[in-house]
Length: 80
Image 1: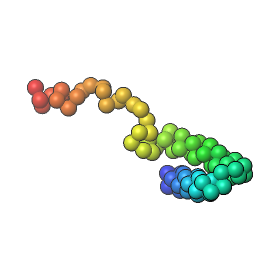
Image 2: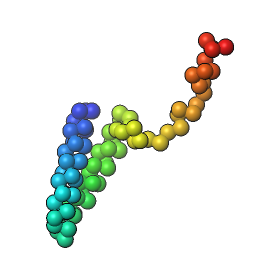
Image 3: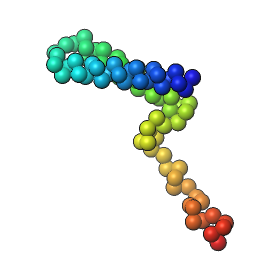
Image 4: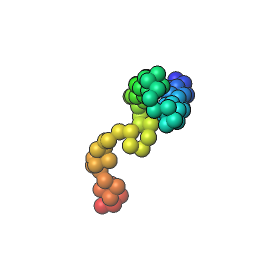
């Protein structure tokens, strides 16, 4: 399941990249813009699904404060 989601994410990301390149030379193409928005929505949904099941896709995927929780490394027993 994990690999399948990653492949689908990669495909959506590739499509968005190609559409952006096309829109660089055809900025008034409404069909291409609609396709880009469609793939962006698809990518966002796939990314959300992946991160809910397997954790963050990138380093900045989640803005979590878990690293602030005790104990800190220097608070461990062996340091006393």
